[in-house]
Image 1 (cartoon, rainbow over the protein chains, first blue to last red):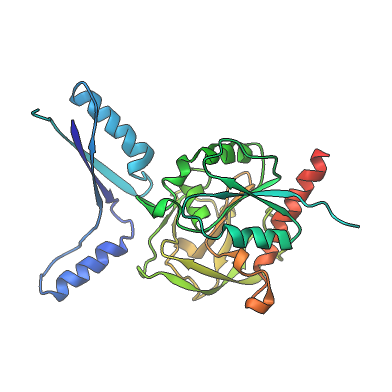
Image 2 (cartoon, each protein chain N blue to C red; image 1 turned 60 degrees about the vertical axis):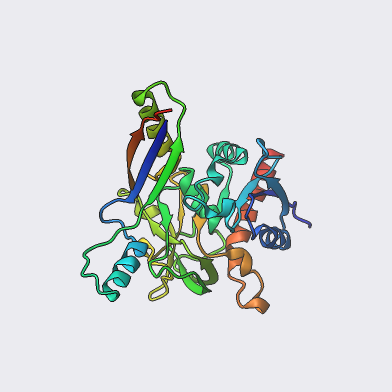
Length: 82
Length: 228
């Protein structure tokens, strides 16, 4: 089963990358508001069902993929048809 | 009288690059440095530990996030829990934060630029095992060289945790409260972004870093004597 984890800087956390992207977009003429830059991790999980997969990926996020002090995460699960 | 040379372990991760400078400096200051490969699950007999600067595991994911799972880090955590002095420099500071041995986390510099220059830091606490050779409020000139040194504290960071602060207009990275170095609650684990091992000889610009490292060597020597 494939899981997609989106990791974002929490609101209020200084995000210099997002600020640089925001400035560049405005320079290009896009009238954007705030831009924030996070990270996407795709991971293949060996699990019986969605609940087990979710529990595993949550543990991965807490232990490694995100730093809970500064980052939030969202988990999306995709069922493999094959 | 010749003073005993305490043994200080320097944990070498794939991507560490200041381990040799740290070893040279500690040796010049009266310690016997010992390299400890990150895959070692046990530390040799040492009286102190240094986590050197560099780019462990290529800084993948987040700085220090992968090094923290090295077998040697479990040994370092046990050493720290037993009261042993542990000093993390730059990437070593990042690793200590990710490992939970120090509070907070280091984020990309506010400027997004890598900074490499001398900075002036002020000693906020001269009573830690890493600053006994300093005077309170003394200023030190020590170089920084990092891309991710912007310290972000936990919401409850106590003022007493702050050992070094960048002096006025010297903050090179946007660090919260001008924090350059912090210590854990027990006082035996310290991390700092400036590189004391690059400032141990006035001929090369500044000898102020020697005060930090020599304090650690003093502390390690006391542990050696206490053991004897």
